[in-house]
Length: 259
Image 1 (cartoon, rainbow, N blue to C red):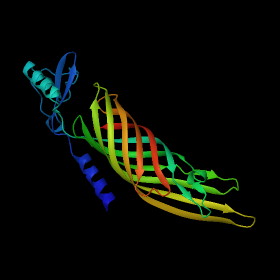
Image 2: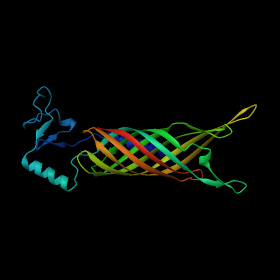
Image 3: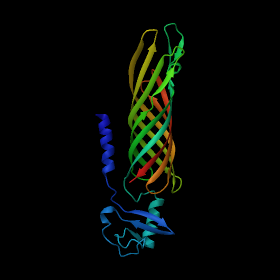
Image 4: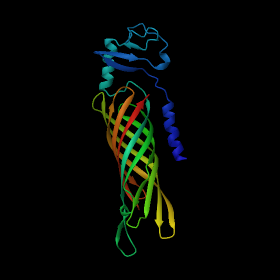
C-alpha cells in the first residue's frame, strides 16, 4: 500500500499542468510565453517569431518595466514558473559491501567471498521540480543478475529490484549547469539463487531479502535545452537490515525530459 501511495502521489504531480507564463532571454530582450490555455489569443505586441503567421502567437516582448520586475524576481530567488514534471531513465553501476560473521569454529567469514559485489542496474524515473531549488523524484530500479562461482563450482546468483522516492535540492551554477544533492528512501528486494552439484545431483536453493535503504546522493545536471537534461549522480545507500549487505554505492548516468 505504501508503494502505491508513493506512485499515486508522483503521478498526481505529473498530471498537474503548468498554469503560468514562462520567460526567455534572447538578444538582450526578455520574452514571455503564455500557458497553453491562453495560446489561442493573439497578442498585439511584437511576436518573437515572424514566420508563425499561420499559428496563434505564443510570445510577446516584455516592456522595460516588466523586464526589470522579472530580473528583480530572479535576484530574490522567486521562481516565475510553477511545477515542472519530468520523466527519465538511468543506467547505474552498483557495488555492494557485505558483512563479516563468525562461523561455528570462531573464524571470520565475509559474504563477499561467495557473493558477487558488482552489478548494473536500470531505472525509470518520474518527478517534478517545484522551483529552481527543490524537487521530488520517484523511481523503479531493476538490476542485472550476477553470478559468482567458487573453487568447487558452486554458483551464487543475485539480482535486486527497488522502488522509492528521493528529495532533490538544486543549486544553479549557470543557465545550463546545476549541482544536485538528494535524500531518499527505498524498499529493496534481493533475490539469491544457489546451485550446488555433486556426482549425482544438482541442488538449487532460493532466498529473498527485503530491506529498507536510506539513500544519500550528490551530482550534477546539464540542461541541454528547455526540455532535455543530462544527469550524473553518486549515491550511498545504508540498509536497515545489514546482517548480510552493509551498504551499497551507485554511480549513475541518465536523461530527463521536462514537460
